[in-house]
Amino acid sequence: MASINTNMSAVIAVSNLNKTSDEMTSVLTAMSSGQAINSASDDAAGLAVYTAMSVDHAAWEQAGNNAEIGTAILETADGGLSEIADILERMYELASQASSGSVTDTERAYLDDEYQELLTQIDSIVESTTYFDTSLLDGSYSESFTVSADSTATPIDVTIATAFDTTGLALAAAVDTSTNATTALGEIEAAIETVSAGRAEVGAVMSRFDYAAGNIETAQTNLESAMSVYMDADIAELSATQTELGVKMDSAIQALSVSNENLEKLSRLLS
Image 1 (cartoon, one colour):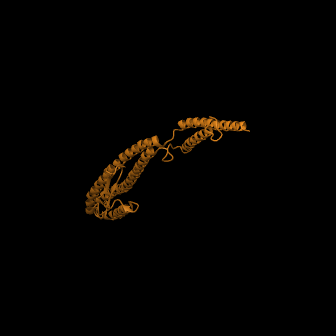
Image 2: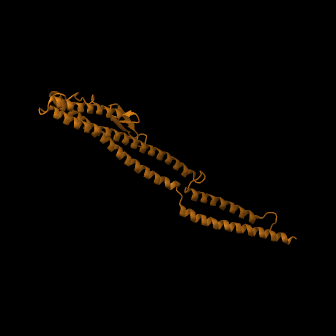
Image 3: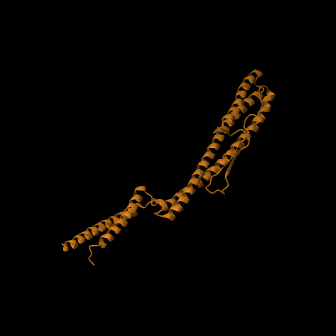
């Protein structure tokens, strides 16, 4: 029915044009942001799942940071122990020389001077081997590190219970006599074994952190892949949709134009 009161064809054309325009806005927003979900109205369920995954991802990132920090602490401790081990080797050489009958007491005094300096250096290394002002080699270090996003997972405990200073290693005080030097040899041997055992323990825990870091990386990769399914925009599909919506908008505009022309023609019939 022809009517000049209500131009239904124009109303329908405008309605379709508005709907298509809204869809085009959504498509262009997704293309410009690279995200399939830009508001809850795009995909409320998908956004909820993605948000939960984001929380897990943040937890895995923190677990990765914890593993890196734990490894850094152990590397610092191992570096200090390595220096102490080198010093003990030199001290053993000095004690071996001082215990020999081929040197005089005067020469032993010279050897003891270096020996005393090395004793002081061991204590200095223990004092300076810290991580953010936390001593690592004085026998007091004990911390736990969470290396999983699962709150029920067992953390990695790092405990360095041995004091590696001269008192903790029970090192002889001097090599100024043949008798003292002979005693020092046995004590230095024991100290070397203690340091070696300490490095082995540190290395074992470092290995745990390495495996934990590998597991964290795998979990993060898998989670990021799953998150991309919900959030990453399919640019190829959006481009095709954009073209389709462009055609619809052109058609709606053309239909609106024709509807208005027809109304004008009806109006002219009354004149």
